[in-house]
Length: 548
Image (tube, rainbow, N blue to C red):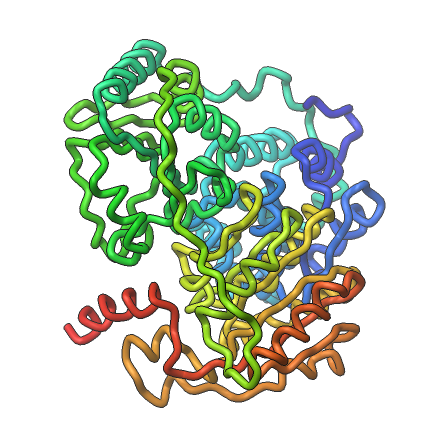
């Protein structure tokens, strides 16, 4: 970790990012960050140019979820502030993203001129990012700059949250002071006694339970605990449901997997099994309104063991300073082996597709896409009915479903899929996006084409904001109509297809699956009144809230 005396601040930042596994940085150049970009161009880290700064942040989010850490570099003011929504989403969704912002030079700031991109005192930008990151640093002091870089990168890893680094342009090439090797401690260990007691109590409860089961949440994915999860599930023969934000934390074709649990939004089978269990192990679950089905979950706290980032709660017993990773790993090794059979998986109905002249419908669209999934596909969903309909997709491998499922920011999918594919070049993205969300950030499809990626984009074109329309109808839900299948004329090279019915969709899907050198986009025409069952259940609950 200790650099040589001659290491500059900018070079050390790139070196540390590389050591943390970052091979690509997303962003849009600007004069306050050009010096850093010049360094990047001569480093092992590749710059991925995006069409906007906010999409760079979404891309870094997708990259982080697939690789463990993502990064973007933007200019001061207009560049950094354009990322705020996407960075807030990464904070809410626990995606460790490093935001690197250039800034006016230290001397320029001292003389306090009216520099372009300035919007107030120079510290305003850092203060904004302090609210949506877990650590910030301004690298204006050469004596402390390298230490500050390490501090924020350690925070990003430990807390699985974004961090912010601001580098004045006259400090990029300034030598930094070496960091002592012992400057940063390893992650604090769990309280050994509390961990042992929490595990022992849980193992005892598991031995007494008749129908124990596990609900897997998003924190298991963010902290890389999928192997420990599988070990626990297979040793104890526990059936597993996932939360919406934790979807694909376990491979969804594993015999233990039951489906998504989100209260009244769940399919009936998964809901019944979870709510009738006499012991629920809720591991890495965040009890937000989305994962609890707008708080319709019916869960008895007396039957729950809940382990979160740094605490285990068993009924009235609370065990602080017990890390989720330590608890899951120890429980996987300590749980008694069971021979119970897994519950039978829900039957997948057979259906004929395509039917001649049959208009497209959400349920049959998802059923056809489910049959098209392969182990090499990452499903990236935007917000809206495409997200709720996708609950019925069974991804083949773990961690192959990405969405802004809790923060629910429209426009996430197309740029996040860019980051995911750059991070995992051996995989291919299936992007599910509504027409409204695509209009927000769909320009990033041109970046997919630029870098030779071949995602399949399925546009749920129901001519407006369908989620809001089901909650409260009004002309404000209507949007402009785009010919999505013709975007290759502008974004190219890409293949576009128009799919008003099942026959045309089948032709389009087969063509897209066979195309491996450029993006494909399928414009699927859906009735405004059509929606997935989960969307209809959600809208009914939200409608009552909107109406007061």
